[in-house]
Amino acid sequence: MSRTEQAYAELIRRVKDYNLLSSCGAVLGWDERTYMPHDGSAHRAEQMALVARLTHEMATAPRVGELLAEVEGSPLVGDQDGDAAANVREVRRGYQRAVKLPPDLVEELARTTTRAQQVWQEARAANDFATFRPWLEKIVALKRREAEAIGYQASPYDALLDEYEPGATAAEITRVFAGLRDDLVPLVRAILGSAKKAPHDILEREYPIEPQRAFGEGAAKAIGFDFAAGRLDVTTHPFCSGIGPGDCRITTRYNPRHFNEAFFGILHEAGHGIYEQGLPADQFGTPLGSACSLGIHESQSRLWENQVGRGRPFWEHFFPKAKVVFPAALGDVSLGQWLFAINDVRPSFIRVEADEATYNMHIILRFELEQALIAGDLKPADAPAAWNEKLTQFFGLTPTTDALGCLQDIHWSMGGLGYFPTYTLGNLYAAQLMEAARRDLGDLDGDFRRGEFGRLKGWLNEKVHRPGQRWRAGELCRRVTGRPLSHKPLIAYLRGKYGPLYDI
Ligand code: ZN
Image (cartoon, rainbow, N blue to C red; front, side):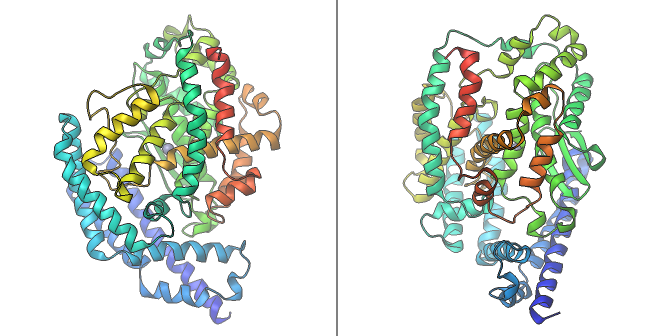
């Protein structure tokens, strides 16, 4: 073994070790949100803080920097598409981010956001922006300091975005989102102008929990979530936690008076889970064994939840089964009525309740405001008015309270500025990947009608999951679909779906 090879081997060993430790934290986190008894929370917080501190120390050890310096520029990383090049590139990225942040800033952010989340919760409940305002001001100031410490080329927002979507820039996202917005606004207007209205009351009938669980689990299994390597449990806030090879935990919540929450939630989290289960196990702990970006992760959940799970072929298979499982709710419902109900478009104030068309407008609104906040063009004190103005411009709706406006999401109180765009990136990547899958695989709808999802899952495993972080999201998209990310596939998909439903 050459000196460089030895350095690379030690680097990988260290990276695997701290990710292994971090995955122990993930088990603790999953347990905290599912089965931990109430009184265990103080001790659990200590355990998790220790794991986080040790992981951070290992990840920022000066030795990691020495090893990176030794390997970089060597023939070992000469092949840009090779394993070592990708691993070294992404370990460098994480290392740089971690060591560039001054410890006092990290500490202040942690302290501020912990407290700000409590204040935000109370402020939202009391519809009281004034209480939250000083905290938002502090967080924006700290995030601007963070962006300066990390560094950026064009915009400070890029430095924040990079945490969730490595390599993406605000300029690039602005370009794609602008195209999306230009096409989406008239589409939503046309839908709202249609005389046809979805029979959404069908979804609010009685759906007993136990049959919901069995039906949802059956669908998750059918699309390819492996229950020998995963679990489905109940939590208030659903999530997916990929703990490691052979162990991926997803959660949902059941509402006996609303079908969508659990069922589409399960498909969504199972989509995340199928991605985690599809990462190469032998590369666990290295960038090659890790998810590409939050946008790509979200594309995998949206693809199964929406592109597949809200489509006619999927329900040609599943609807007759649903009628057997929920005879009281669905006895008098036709497949056509069902499809219209689950694809209902109605503008709302609340992002998490939004349909596939209006959801992205909620994200574009937040993306535009966040950039203005970070650039210093918008004062936190003016955020509520700016929010309401944009929502009126997009939907013709004006929130009557800040709880329905800029206080609705937890993200800002957590310091998660830069996170929101990944949701719409997920929708865009999902549509473009699905278009490519249909081109490569031919009649996928025929598969879905027979309840077969293996060819699509296999394609995603090969094209999207197995590469891990070999390429950044934009490059992965170009390689798999033959084109850079565009808003056109999503618009084509939405028009194809809503045109016949709303006669537009
Ligand atoms: Zn998701």
